[in-house]
Length: 166
Image 1 (tube, rainbow, N blue to C red):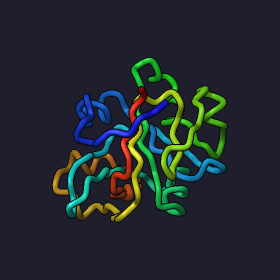
Image 2 (image 1 turned 180 degrees about the horizontal axis):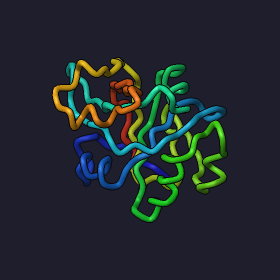
Image 3 (image 1 turned 90 degrees about the vertical axis):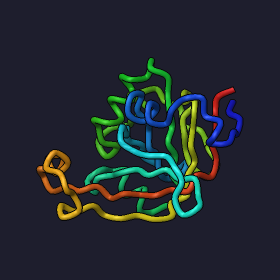
Image 4 (image 1 turned 90 degrees about the horizontal axis):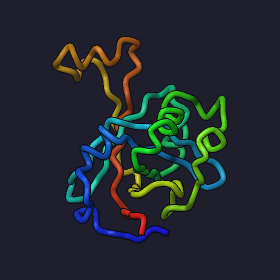
């Protein structure tokens, strides 16, 4: 069971949650969704709104769901789920049933989808996007992340709800 809290009442650092523990970015509806592991992202304030900023490469199956809908979630898990998060980050939902392979149980979260096993869920409404390009990078070490030219699309989502496991 989840309860809603204010984003400012998170007990853990969002940087730690995203970069160290990873998260699942999920888009779509309860009937049709996809999820992928993310370890890059940001939480903060933009345009007077609490926001999440996330990045999805166009070849990812989740990209199609991000483009179709206006809601997405970030779901955070305890360390015991690192193997399952690895599966969601390395396999495509086009080729396998990630829920069957991981045992994650989808649940409704606001207007989005999360997972029963998550300890924290951030529900977002997509409010902006911008495509990255090579000419926007000032450092070669950042450009090295794009040796295939597969630049991310950056999505900004306004935080609608933050849910934590009771």
